[in-house]
Length: 111
Image (cartoon, rainbow, N blue to C red; front, side):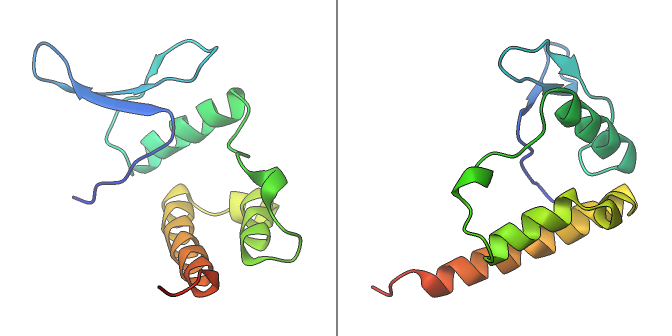
């Protein structure tokens, strides 16, 4: 099982030993998300909660126009990306994140 971190999701074992996933965002009510992270049902509920609470446009104002990161953000907001199956969205997001990190690593000075 792959381990990945989702923003605003707190994962813990409760007093009875059951694994819980709670969506916590400042200023909003806590919501328990059923299922395992990465499953289509879980991701659908997670994205619905994100959209309900204002989305994930953190850092969008710091993006340079024409950069790879700006292009990836525009793709995430496009109708063609939103029309994909949730599992495909998760896979593509992981691939595009790797591309972004690789591109940013090329720009950083070598020490």
